[in-house]
Length: 637
Image (cartoon, rainbow, N blue to C red; front, side, top):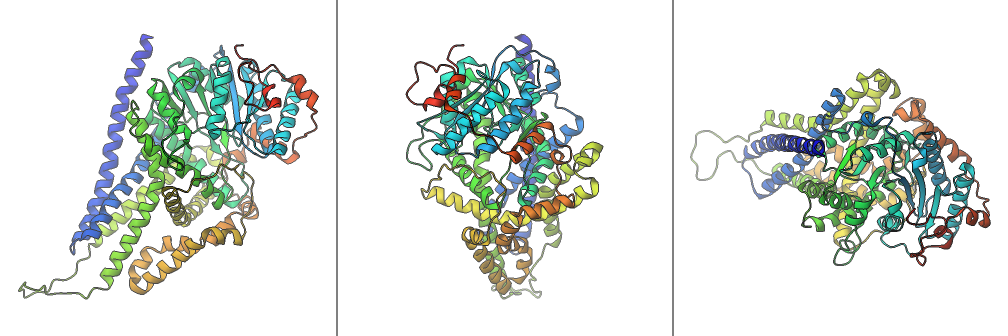
């Protein structure tokens, strides 16, 4: 216990130093960029509009500078091999598990074959961990409202139980009252059956984790009882569309480095992403119940994005929340096209804006409040960028329309007052902005290229370089579209339009021109009108803004083209946008792919389901569908 307190004091001292360094470097970078911009603006006098633009610029540059220094910290950690204040998975290798662990997968109107494939891959991988497999049970937590899908889920459960002879190990429950969405689904499990287990590992319907990763998480939680939540890094995999492959490539190249950077300065006050993580059940049950916000949705009522709040409450209760960026064997799927990607962000926008209501919640750690702020800023930054670009356009149009005045009224001078252009400062500011935006990608590529095996897994240095350039071009063209989407989502939320809780489409679906036009016609119109006005009134600024305008004008064509699986397959044949999970796929992903191709049998009889079931908790019999209820173990094992 004394050693534990000494370790905690050590990392707390390091946290102060690390966070102070991050703050100073971030503000210094943003301050230098803002000073350069102020110098440019003051050359010919400033006005209120330009001062407002400068303030927006400082806030936004601070935001992207924090990402830059997080990436640099992660880059240094990856080069060094480990963080001395972090968790080392190797330190718990071979440690026997003494406590029971629940693997939970909440589902809601999902594709049953996809869920079955993921569960099969996870459970089979767990069973291969012969020394520790007996410590794990698997729970399918259904909130499905469609009776036909629910029937297929029960049949799938029966198939899994019979195939693995896992009666009493794999359980299925379907709630009749689906209150509080996913958070309520998990909370229901925790309240009813959480006392049987030390921890639960939470998976999404598209999550896959290897047995070795699950065992490592459980071992680390037993070795570190002060940790309440331990978050693994879910790496993207499995997409066939060009959009999905671009997203996978960019995230796979940078996410490990960025997560190492986040873990470097978050330490024990990290965050929780709602899946691919292990949670200690007793403190979660006692301290992490979500409040009901006053007022009506979307900013009131039930909290939509529960994970950040649960992490904040866990930290408030005195438990650490940690990230584990070095753990291998954790994956998830990404949206297959721009529109599904935006639909997911629509839910996240409303959920993160709700967190603003919790900033004043008593007892929260300052880092938890910072997590709320950064989550809000991830979406509020879009209307701020849009406002800054519109203000810059307005200033450029006004300056282009001015008649130069070489002799100021009331000032007698033999020499004219020539308009000044601070070209050196403009070039420096442009270069600094490019460095802040592009350096994280370059550092991620350096880490991949320096290791021979990783370089080969990404297709070699040449193809990795080409893929990086193309992915950067795509990101540049996509950014204006997401800027307008996020601005629209924020406006809808503030105007009282709440998001619906629908099942996500996790297929590799393509988007038609009709659908893309219906969703993005205003993006296209904005790009055309904005570009035409600048070309007519301020042609010089038009070329500076051309990347933004091109992204808006091409948004519909880009959405449709990148949603094609054929385009993704063409890139695969050219060995572009490769990720290690494709070139050297682990057994779990090979199994997932084969099961998705074959489908899942669904011929289980109702009598078989009842025969495999165990008695339900006696005190909670009314709120759950009968078949699902009798599939759970009794309380108090």
